[in-house]
Picture 1: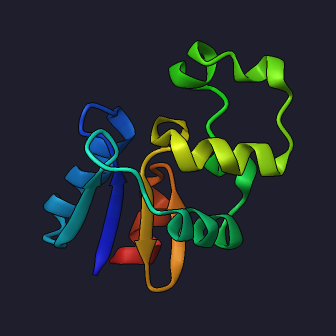
Picture 2: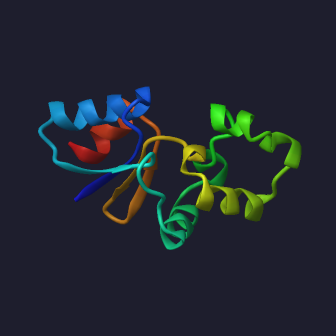
Length: 113
């Protein structure tokens, strides 16, 4: 089963969900606005992907929280991700033991079709 983490108002998440729907692929959707991923889930993502991509330092939430001024190290970024899911690069997709970040149609075609 493919699990998609994100928020429904995010363009990248919408594109990802549309891709799955258009290709008749069923997914399980996890809404960051309603739930926060567990600490273990975040740790597993950090192990399987690049923390600097997973941690979205370009988003509104990053600016609102003024995190740039904190000059976070990796541990600091992980701690923030565990308490503020709006800091994740979206969507985060769990599939086949892997973690896929953001929307890239070519990567999706290679991975899911």
